[in-house]
Image (cartoon, rainbow, N blue to C red; front, top):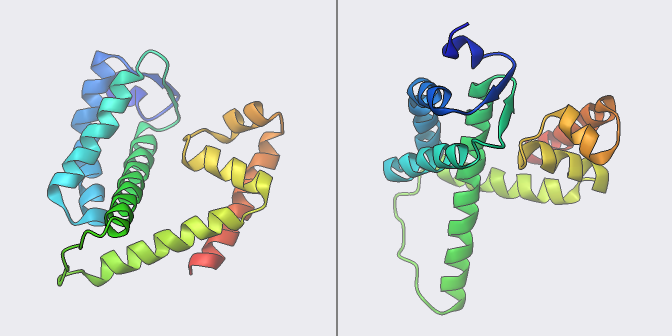
Length: 176
């Protein structure tokens, strides 16, 4: 079985060959996702670089369960949200310190909609019941599988799936 075929099924351990194959196969798709959300070519490149840097740094302990493409896309989206959250905090600190932010006269509707939905998503997560929120955050932020979450929280995988379904239902209701 070729390295490329192994990347679509089963558990994947990162080594030089798999890392290179992942990069060649998915960097462009990750960049496009990054650019679509940020509308900033440099930031999109940085996000992709950060994801691959993290992958390489954790190569000795990281095992990707399932399709590598899904893992990389989720990691890219999470890194974008992390960057946007960080930029938002910086702007808040600058405003609090009395620095004026330059006016952006060219904010697109997509950017505004994305930021509003992101805010609603954050509020929705905060409003989830405690166990449901914990399971959802482990799934989305720690990028764990339902089985890994079940093991970590000492609950059944079916319970994890139920919590995730409930969280998604409540978040969709909150955002849309």
